[in-house]
Amino acid sequence: MTPDCVRRSSCPLSIALEIFGDKWTLLILRDLLFKRATTFKDFQASDEQIASNILADRLSRLSTAGIVASDRSPDDARVILYRPTTKGLDLLPVLVEAILWAARYEKTAAPAKILKRMREDREGFIQAIRQQFPPRSES
Amino acid sequence: MTPDCVRRSSCPLSIALEIFGDKWTLLILRDLLFKRATTFKDFQASDEQIASNILADRLSRLSTAGIVASDRSPDDARVILYRPTTKGLDLLPVLVEAILWAARYEKTAAPAKILKRMREDREGFIQAIRQQFPPRSES
DNA sequence: CACTTTACTTGCATTTTGCAAGTGATATAA
DNA sequence: TTATATCACTTGCAAAATGCAAGTAAAGTG
Image (cartoon, rainbow over all chains, first blue to last red):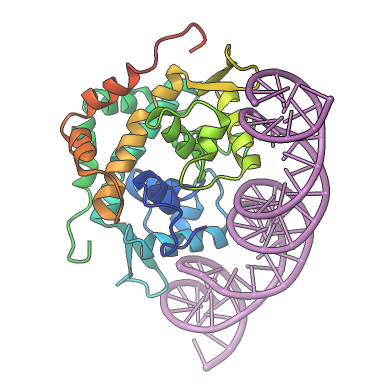
């Protein structure tokens, strides 16, 4: 993947794609935001079976990009707890639009109820998820 | 890239990413929708300098996925004219959200005027672009 | 009829991905 | 205290995707 410092162009879409334009990055964000994944193990447990080296790489990039933050668990010093920053939460509209598009045109397992909610009250849906993540200083 | 027939999971986001989760696919769509690119040459002319083999591969995937359609030019039989289908136009919200996100958090060359329009009248902005593409039977 | 243009394709080097098997630090059980 | 398990990675290597430069066929131009 392209490092942050060398950009193909200054087009916002191109820059966005250099940050999350791959098969895994937004899926990690999905687990973080929708499935409340917090640990490395949680992310490894998703259906898509991400390889541990790729997961480690993506988490580190997301962290560098300021999209996720992490701390060691106070209960177990082995565990690292990942959480979205505001910049990460602000990717929710992108996730929602991508999900709605795929659900409209492809055969997916998206629950009809959630899709309905997303479609009919996009803002409310996004706000409900945001509220699950308490504001922090470094976010 | 993953072929359409073998899916990692039935999650809509995962499926969406199998279709456009790479560094180039959405940029091609950007050129098609925002810059009115119609020919192979037009797409090659973008700032990001896509390699011709990758461009050919992505156009063929987009075509297979039903996101773009193409016809030979009536004026010049060498030229193939690409255009978005409805399914392609329906990716506009994803593009817009990605652009707004990048413009908010990264240094980009996005014109302030267009961003303002996108932010303040997302629906109108999208509709204005849609109307530039007349409806067709195969779209 | 030579020359150019268009939309690709081909061959090959480089980079990224994916898989399986570690590793070190910490926790837990005996 | 020691053995074992768990957690968050790392490492090595094969396979796939990407990027570059050069080529090609079909069609248009002077």
